[in-house]
Length: 140
Image (cartoon, rainbow, N blue to C red; front, side, top):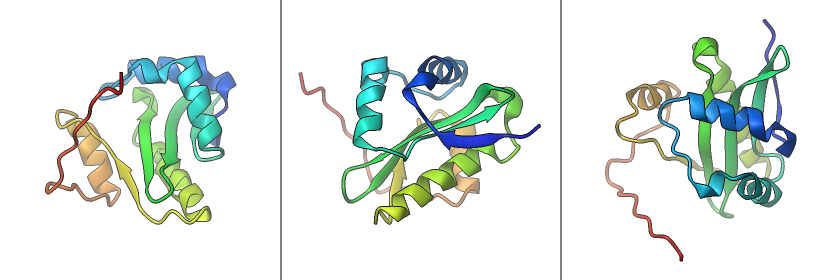
């Protein structure tokens, strides 16, 4: 079966959200609302992708940057289509997009309990940064 990787468009939102909900290790918040994704895609044009097979979204990756560093969020592949190179292809498309605008380093956040996700990223050559601690606070 042929997989087509193309830019993520807002029209993909419902299929992408269904994919995210079907995958372990994806942390969804209010920022993942349709309006939140619309805003993200406007700020980061051409950097997020979907993998489509037989008209269905089977993979996705949100990618953006802060002007210095890239970030990949919610890279997910449908469980029945894993281990076919789709996740790696999505990540590589994100990295290529970042390179094309002068961003040379990219980060991801993976839940510590997401062993499969951590193995995926390590096998793809990503390095776990154990010297860093991620801290967050709501801006409300």
